[in-house]
Image (cartoon, rainbow, N blue to C red; front, side, top):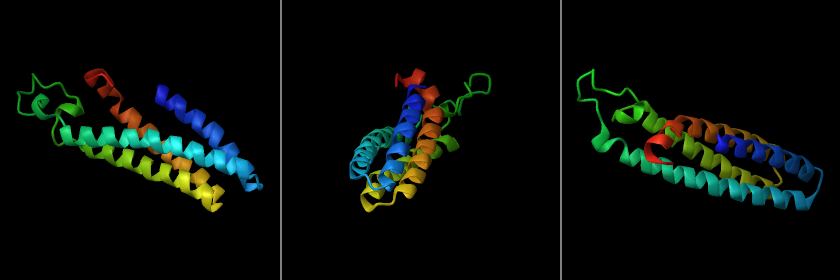
Length: 140
């Protein structure tokens, strides 16, 4: 839930910066681009983690070959669960949107940058909620 709280902070600071930058404030545009760089760093880390999780899948902890009474039922114990691909797609979508929040203010496309940050945060929060059960499992 800390990640969701950080997402709200990013939204609460980035959008006003972009509105101020659209009025001609060069300093707000630079601060927005710097905040975009921090967003890229966070989503970049999430994308690396998602890539690792996608490659590692459930290896020896898969229980799909066990009897139905023994199966745990969580998606991370199933090798071909759709969530493995979905979590990677969400993290990569967040990274692409975060890159847009870095570049668009430099191109004076402030409204597009606001749309990019909203879409990026939505993808990032969806990824965080999808993998949050793995936090207890893997200590993340």
